[in-house]
Image (cartoon, rainbow, N blue to C red; front, top):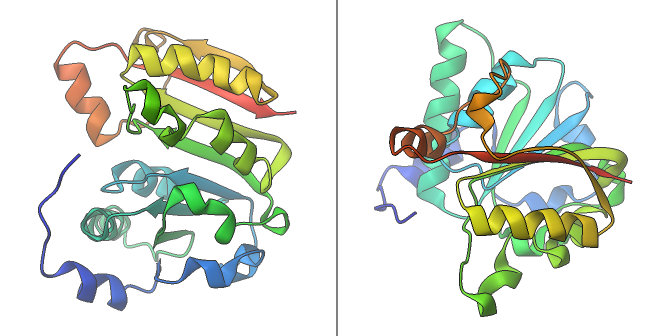
Length: 218
């Protein structure tokens, strides 16, 4: 998604205590970055942060990291996180957002970080065959995630794109993950804990079915 740059983004992010500008400095040390050590969940491509804001607020017993490459997206994520926590007058102490290229994720994550769950929501489907390696669910990327995803750790994936979903099922199996749950119509399942993303709302209004899966690092 293309988004117009906002002049306020850089200053607001720099002033936010839960934004980190140089995540590579925390490689192997993410447990100590949070004030209280808890299991860590990671969202790759957090966008405007609506998903991670609600998820982190609803799960105070877990620490969350949201990664995106676009400053403006992270600026909106910062504001959305603040808004959700402000409504209940709660301090933001279990979520961090950071700017980084996910294709180079091993420069900021290591096996010592022991991530317990990864969320990938509505990533770029890169439909042209020669671009498939850029997909966040491509085997090349899935192998990288194994470096810091705990054994038994999970990846939760949602998409509107049929081809990406079908290919991703194969990708996970090829990379040695166990796909233990999948659906071709998430909202027919009536899953109460599902948190809608901005894209999810948009696609639902268009009548597009949401595909989802959960895979385990075995």
